[in-house]
Amino acid sequence: MSQDLLQTGTNELEIIIFTVGKETFAMNVMKVREIIQPIPVTSVPNSHPHVEGLIRLRDEVLSLVDLYKVLGELRAEEATEDKFIVGELNRMKVAFRVEKVSNIHRISWSDIEKPTDLSQGLEGLVTGVVKVDDKLILLLDFEKIVVDINPETGIHPRQIEGLENKNRSTKKLVIAEDSVMLRKLLHDTLTAAGYEKLTFFENGEEAFAYLNHEKEEGTLFDNVDLVITDVEMPQMDGLHLTKKIKQDEVMGNVPVVIFSSLITKDLYFQGESVGADGQISKPEIAQLVKLIDELLHV
Image (tube, rainbow, N blue to C red):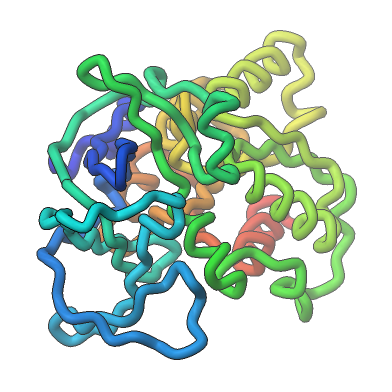
């Protein structure tokens, strides 16, 4: 994948397409570290039912998540094309068992639709739906899959215990995050930290429309002190949102913080290239609060 794909905030992404049972799914290539043939798996007693066991990949030991079990799909006895997708999210590497891996497609976030009622039957595990070669592809929420298995890898209000007590209640934050689960966790955690005036949007397009409206009304700096954005979102991703904000003479004065599972050492340059004022990797919510405090001089 070309390293400059998201560097310039083009609102594009590349997805790797794979099947599990009868369904076709996709994963953002930015999360994929490698795809390997199945290797020996060591079972772990009393582990989560979705965890098949542990694998040793060179010098690393990784958990192997069985997407057949996660998605409630049956594995055919004659299935011989299984692959392990090694992903990195929230600064953690995890392997996922899938069936057949087909190819990589470049698409626009604007082509991704919100999940339908049908796909929501997957317990909120689908973040978007896109049509590729006349076939509907479901984008999976791999962060939720991992958090459902191990809640300690997610965001918790207790993570902010010990933070300095400050008056944060007057500051107004705009947050773009497509995950229902993460919107709730961010709401609960930021409120517990004292940031009570929160305005949430499901994607960058809705957030930018709000910011633009406030600018035209002359109330931008009355109602917005800082923007927090995820990267992966349907319609408009967080890098494109950040770029549009920072290229605007007025909106560019509003601090923007990227809060994403894609903030790794290798990908940090992307946020810098679009002008982000700060970047924090999920689920480091305490670091996010400290950065907001710093940018807003709280």
